[in-house]
Image (cartoon, rainbow, N blue to C red; front, side, top):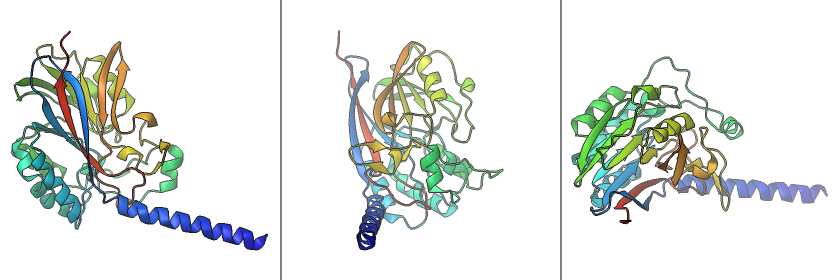
Length: 303
């Protein structure tokens, strides 16, 4: 009996070690997802929107930088980035170099917690138990987020942190509104709330963490499409089942990809990116490859 238990323990340990080893490999298996969505007014052209999130870039991640730089070859019409760009100040210059030609494309951005604060070790088992990571206790940001903001804005992208703006993209007028990071309780939707722009061809909400309070606000105000990141798609998933946690109050069924959200008698399309990175203290993914997404927005069929 004791020998059988020992063999079972060894087998379980071997499976766990193999899973961890694969998780370290999968964290570098960068993938481009493609999504089609009929959401534009009838009669126009398609729009190609590149959604990038949660790079969590740190020095030495040359393969991730190469993947980000390659995204310019997709020739998107619009770039949407939903935060958590870097985890170390020395990653700022390589990040901006990787954005490269994409900065010449119209773009919008918001920030996440790891644009403000460098990560610290957190108990991964607490994350699984509570369904979300602990928020930082650092009193002040310790990453150069203002320089990141200024350099992306100087390149031509629009900062949507508690701001509203409109862009002309591909013959369409797009109206945007965004918030600061809800995971750090920096969000205040009242600063951008109000009815959708009826003169726009598409109303878009952008935030980092898809907490329900923000999804409700965006949707009730008539946003057609909402972009978010933060969840890492669950990061460690069970094959055939999916994510165990979302790192916010969003349900696991919508942890990544395209879905919908309903609030206030309105329904919006929601796209949550599983992101491209991990915490340096948990540098693995399982059954959840790191990703960027190219959304092809198509005209709705004429009634």
